[in-house]
Image (cartoon, rainbow, N blue to C red; front, side, top):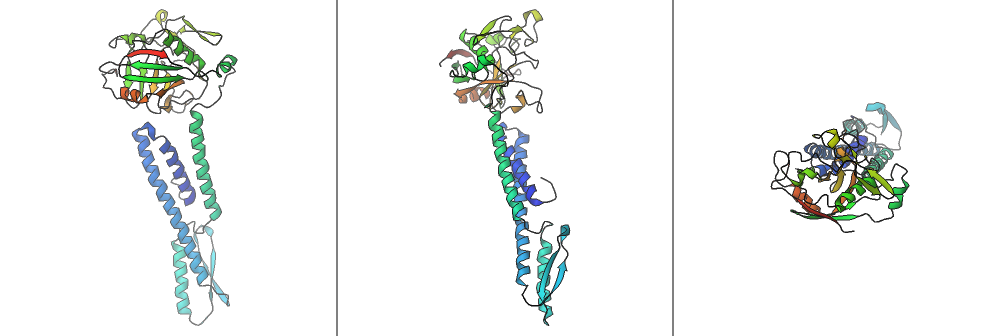
Amino acid sequence: AFWPEPVGPRAGIACLFFFEAMMDTQNKRPLVVAATAFAAVLAVFSCYEAGKQYALSAQSLHVAQAVSTPTAVTSRVLPMPNAHVHTYSRPVQQAATVDDERFEEVFSVASEAPQQAAPNKPLALLGAVSIVAGALTILYAKFKSRGYTQLKEDRPWSMAMAAEPNPQYLCKTTAGEFTIELYMDQMPISAANFMDLADSGYYNGIHFHRVIDNFMLQFGCPYAKDPKHPRCGTGGPEPGSTYKVGDKTITRNGGGSDILATSSSSPGCIPDELTAQISNEPATLSMANTGMPNSGGSQFFINTVHNDFLDWWRDDLSPSRHPVFGEVIDGFDICMKIGKAPTDRRDSPTPPIQMISVERVK
């Protein structure tokens, strides 16, 4: 955006920067908001500068044409920046004083134009097309990152389940109710893990143990049935427990998600399902883990803002890898209400917020 020339591409780059920043303002991070405001000002200024340049260039040519006549002429060559040499003609006559004044007017107007003086309509059209194309590319990337991509692995048992409607669960909490949909068609390993636990009553009576406003709500640790338990956030399913995904059996192996437990008492963990590129957008459910591979179990979190730095394929943003496996389809206002709850020094809500039940409704 700070290219000294030409003005047109500079305006285009500023506009594209503004479009991208504007689409990310839902993060509400101060740096993003500041960048958006800066890009908006820069885009307006650059477009104004480009328009002013075009107007001055057109004016200079208009005046030049006004002082030219089809009579016998002599030419003066006006030195123009950027190696653009323009020849302006004036009639040969005795009243040279008045003619010289008009010639000087042409020279003055032309000299005021920016260094890109000559208007270039094809370049302006190309700039407009590139801005539109860039904006559409950004929109397409955002849409694609929402998860409308095919799975990367050849999993026939997963594809066979895609024809089934995605399951939905009603979550009743002491703060209100919300409904979630599990992406069984795209994330069957993670979704079926949740279904097995929810159908067995595993989540009933557990409290939200970690709530951070403008970030996420974390839930699913069995220790959090006691909201003051010192090991809240470290537990998971029984190691060696199994569940079905179609006709395939998944075993929850003892992993590293319980950082305070010995290896023999580590909770059961499921394989990382790093397949569908579904971004951690607001209202999505994402697998919690310790940061180590295959360390997810029963814990998950609900994003309250777009936490794209947690996307498993965004190594350019952070090393975190949290696959999304569902979303809140109704009652997200309750989740936002929970996100605004006061918390203690461990980010646990005060008073505690309990999940009364998780029941399948579809």
